[in-house]
Length: 84
Image 1 (tube, rainbow, N blue to C red):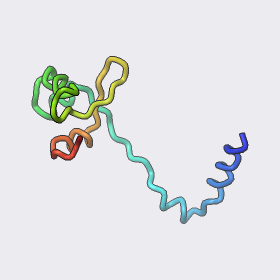
Image 2 (image 1 turned 30 degrees about the vertical axis):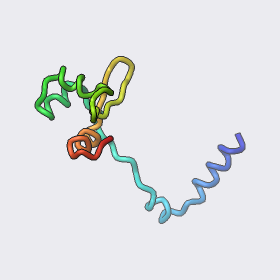
Image 3 (image 1 turned 120 degrees about the vertical axis):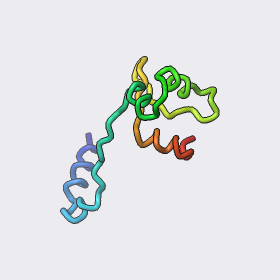
Image 4 (image 1 turned 135 degrees about the vertical axis):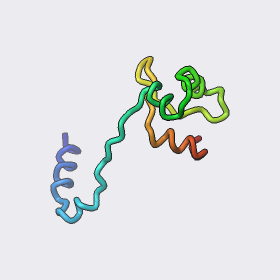
């Protein structure tokens, strides 16, 4: 409980000028495999295959239970060859 009090005191200690320097998070929509297949103009089954770890450069994916979800920025980096 003490640490939460400290955090509250520290955050209230920031001036409005300091708060303007803190970047605000941007919203990026999460894509489904079907949406990625439309973007890349590939079959959905190919998208699933590209996410497998056995590929040399697997498509970056986030698993939500049994569902696969993608971030567009990660897909674009993957296309540029910068993703691991």
